[in-house]
Image 1 (tube, one colour):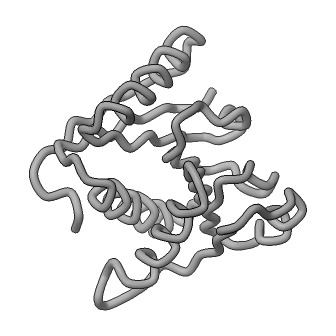
Image 2 (cartoon, helix red, strand yellow):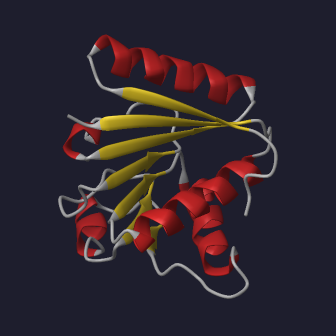
Length: 154
């Protein structure tokens, strides 16, 4: 059964949410995990794509991004990448970690070992992630909440 983790940031900015997402990806890659990031839209995909190349001055995280309205086949073609970012559904090759930055529960989440929801203090995101929490809880998924304060960007 998928382990669900909610990372609750004290921050209110989308930039802080993306920076923390980069940290999660970096940690997962150091553990040799494959990561799929489900974004809310093409803008968010492009922003995370750019940030992953530069979020640490001494290194970058190699990844692939589908940043336009691509066909499902295009997402599957990029699947060999250990980190894939898209607002489209994940290809079948990713099973380790799903990071959900979208508003809704991804329909394919249960095939991942772990799911991370990154929460910031913005009313729309708080409401969406509360709804997601209720969805997972009502279906019996194990949930852990991590309340993070202060600097979560690096």
